[in-house]
Amino acid sequence: MDDNDNTRGFALAEFASVRSLFEANVANGLDLGASFSASVEGQTVIDLWGGWADAQRTRPWNEDTIVNLYSMAKTMTALCALVLIDRGELDPDAPVARYWPEFAANGKSKIKVRHLLSHTAGLPSWPAGMQMADLYDWNKATGILAQQMPLWAAGTAWGYHANTQGFLVGEVVRRITGRTLGTFFREEISTPLGADFHFSLPESEDARVADLVVAESRRPMAFEFNELALRIFTDPATDPALTKTRAWRNAEMPAISGFGNARAITRVHSVLANGGVLDGKRILSEKGCRRALELEFAGAEILTGTQTRHGLGFYLLAGHHVVPGPNIVYGGGRGGSLVVIDFDARAVCSYAMNRMILGPHMRGMALTTAFWSALAGR
Image (spheres, helix red, strand yellow):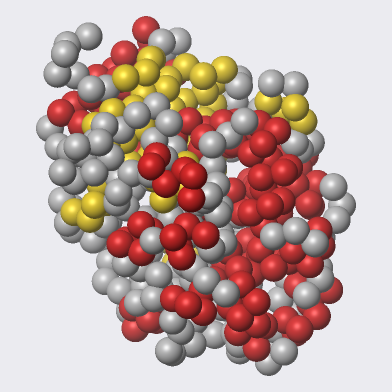
C-alpha cells in the first residue's frame, strides 16, 4: 500500500472495483472521509474506511470513526418497530392511540401505526416557533405531536416526516416497552449484534466522531421545494454544527440523530437480509423481516412531487436498473449516507461519510452499483 494512501480495510478480490472507486473518491476530494461496507449471506466482503475526520485534515478517518448519520437513524428506528411487530407486541394496523391514548387528540384517533412508519400520517412538521431546546426534551416534543392536527387524512398522501417520525415511532415503542427507543435498540439489537451505532452518544465517545462538512451539490436538484417542504426543512435541527454539541449528542431524536459508520449500518441491516439471524443470534423471524417489503404508498409525494415507493419503514427499490430485483429496500441520510438491502441475494451494502453533498445520493449509489455489478459476476 502506498504511503500516501490512507484508505484502509479490505475488499475481497472480486470487489476490487469497489475499492478502486472508494479510493478515487477520497483521493480526488469527492469524499473528505468515508466508510463503505458490504456483506453477503451474513459474511463481510468489503470493509473500507479512509480520508479525514475534519475539514483541516488533522484527524484521519480511522477504523472506529463514527459520524452523525441523520436519517439513517430512521431505518434503525423502523427495525425496532419491526421487532415489536414480530413479537406480537405491536400491531401495525392498530390505531396509534391504542398504545398512546393522548395521541387521539385533534382528529388523530384513526391514524395507524403503519402510517407512522410510512410517512403517511400527516404530521411531517413542527408548529411555528419550535426551538432546539424543545427537541432535546422528549416529553415536550411528543406532547406537542400528541396535540397537533394532521395536515392530511392518514394514508392518502406521502410527505417526509423528516424529524417528527422518530418521536412518533419512538413514543409508541416507549409506551409498549417502558424503554426509550435508544435503550430498546441498544439492549435488543446493537449490543447483541456488536454494532457500533448509538442514538444517544456518551461523552466518552466524542473523540471518535467525524465533523460534518457541508459542500454544495454538484448536481442540480430534480425538484423545487414547495411551501410545506420549506416549512419542514427549516426545522430548528437542520444546522450540521449542532451535531458537535453535547446537547445534540445526549438527546434522543431517532429520526435524525444516530452515530455510526458503514460497518455498523451493514451489520444491523444484515439481520433483515438474512432472515432475522446473524452469527447465530436471532433478532426477528423471516416473516418479520419481510414486513419491510410491504408496499404502503406509491405515487407523487406531497413535498416535492417526485415519485416514491415506500414500505413499512423503508423505501422500496424494486426493479431499479442500478440494483435489479423485486425484494430490495433502502434508506439514506442527509448529505449522502446510504444503505441498500437485497432480501433475495441476502446482501447489504452501506456508505457513510462526513462531506455532506445536499442532493441526490450519487456517491453512495455509485459504490452500490459497483458492488452489485461485482456481486452479479461472482
